[in-house]
Length: 127
Image (cartoon, rainbow, N blue to C red; front, side, top):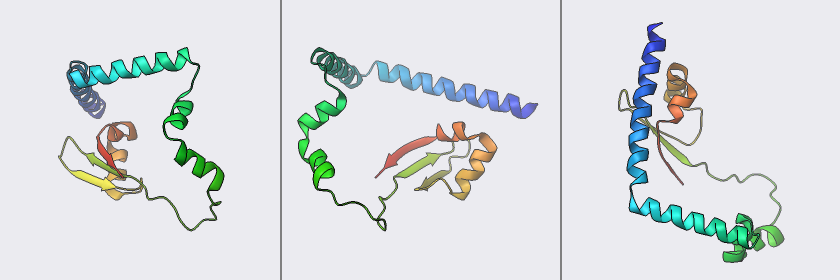
């Protein structure tokens, strides 16, 4: 029973932290500018009946054309490198960097705290 209460209290703490971060973000002028840009862009796309893919194709036609028309079929052997994910356990301060989901410490955390909780500890993703 106490583990449920502990888990609840921990999640409540995380929720307060996230809410605080959201409040800061909503008052950030850069965020407001990006949000305004996004809203205006979406309105423009609706006005001209264009999708995000249409806009991307219009602004950067070369990569799409290359991948569609001239790309050689993949026959295996080469696989794109996975992104590096960096997690930080807020309870211990321990940091885990992994390119796959099969990392020992990360699996132990997911077993102990739950997958959703551990995923909320994701600090950043790098190429």
